[in-house]
Length: 343
Image 1 (cartoon, rainbow, N blue to C red):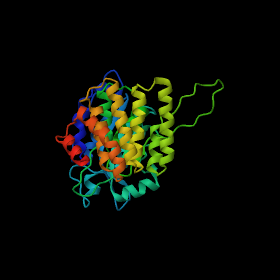
Image 2: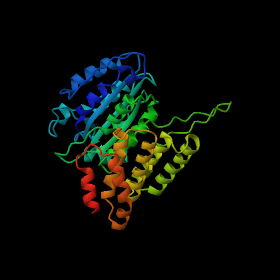
Image 3: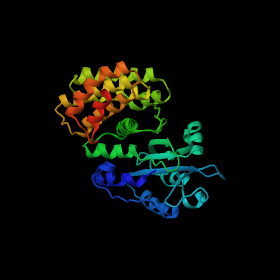
Image 4: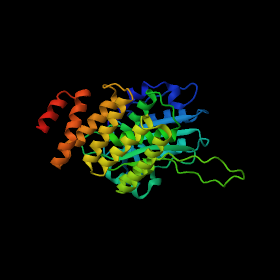
């Protein structure tokens, strides 16, 4: 994983925003070499009495002797794993004993086949203990020579830089959706704290609806595409009812449904929904060079190219051409290539 690529984006976020506190200190370890050095810095941070937030990006490997996961560092190889990688249980040892509610770990990880197989069978493999809340995603490691990028962590940074100040569970859910929209890996394992069950109070407490994105993604990744689409459609109906059709909330759910259609192997439906999302964003007076508008058109274009039914592609083509004329995007020649395909 190209872990260091996300550091400039995170570094552009004010330190206090990273931790949700009035002030904060930041320690950055880019491509660290030695696990003992990482442990020393981590131990010093864990000794702080205040809130601690740890951001991790990297690749997990399994120690073949003890069958324990390790986080690869800059000099890690298969042969030297036990001496050059950071054992995951070192993290748990330093962070798990901190006071409950003071520690948050946000992780974007790629797992080698051995770790991936064990993780899918035993999600507790990456537990950090009762003192730390772990949020994140794990994807299967790419083949040698095919680097992956920490899109989940990048989404956190982009949300903050755009002005979002959401609770951590909501940030996790939104970042998961954004990372999934950019992902090429077919499988993702999401990390989030399990809900705590408490006795019902004597006085009824207000009911708070869960954030729905993890459940929707879980259904889609498990192949339950109808269930995922139904959940997203229900939340879109709620957004329409509370905020109206010309609202950012409604557009968001249109985009979620578009990506669910992609995951379900329905490129024509996905293209149609991305076209609708782009038109809605333009109607909300977003500029043609707005990254969200460009992304919607690019995704509509990409999905259109996946349509095997020539009649269906021909039906959607003129709308896509008209939109491409208004939103050319960052890829030179995209409009010309689209017109050639249409011809």
